[in-house]
Length: 103
Image 1 (cartoon, one colour):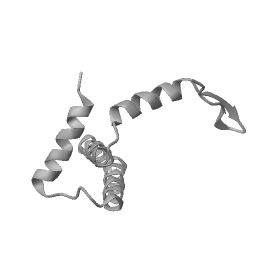
Image 2 (spheres, rainbow, N blue to C red):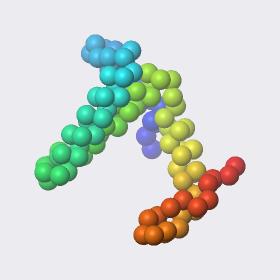
Image 3 (tube, rainbow, N blue to C red):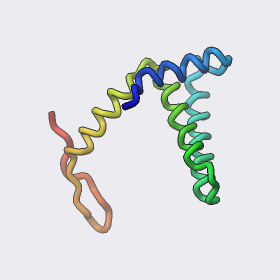
C-alpha cells in the first residue's frame, strides 16, 4: 500500500528542490487545470501517454494539497465514505442526488 502523505511531502520537497512555485496558489490551480487539459487531449487523441498525463494531474494535486496544508489522503477517504452513503435517483434522465450523507 502506498503512503499518500509521504508522497505528498515528497512532491512538495521536489518542488522546493527544483525551484518550482510553492507560494502562488492561483498559479498552482491554473497549472493543475492545464495538466488535466493535457490528460484529456492525450485521451482524445488516443496517445500512449494518458497514464503519465493523469499522473501529472495527481502530482500537482498532491503538491497543492501540501502547500495548503491539506491531508489529501484523509480528505479522499472522507469523501469516498460520503459518496458511498449518498442516494441517487434518475429524474428526467439525470442521475440526481436525493439523499445527502448523514453522520
